[in-house]
Image (cartoon, rainbow, N blue to C red; front, side, top):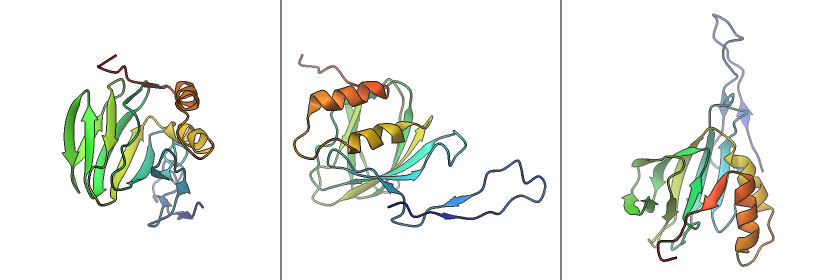
Length: 168
């Protein structure tokens, strides 16, 4: 369900210079949950005139997270808004607690997971936008155990890849 309140308030100087503000109320957005994560799309690239996408990730207690992966095109900025999230960036693990932020640059292997016994939440700014198309396609995969071959196909179509394993 996508519930959006859009206000149309422009600058008095030149109304054509600024896009309409978009207000997303708590719990609103497009639910793109996949691979065990709650993924709420809060702002699309269209909403931000191509600047970024904004997501809220709801990470259940004990979730192992996605496999270690690489984004070819997007940088991600994670801010923990609740609970604790471990982010491994290029093999170095750091724990984010509420209010902590971390930049995950494109082309650097990373993974995140929740080792705690409480749900965690991340606000993710993704630039340039487009990751929403990946999540939409991923969310259409059949439920059940992860079919990694299908997931890898979807990843490739959207500029993502699995990171090489250190023990391989």
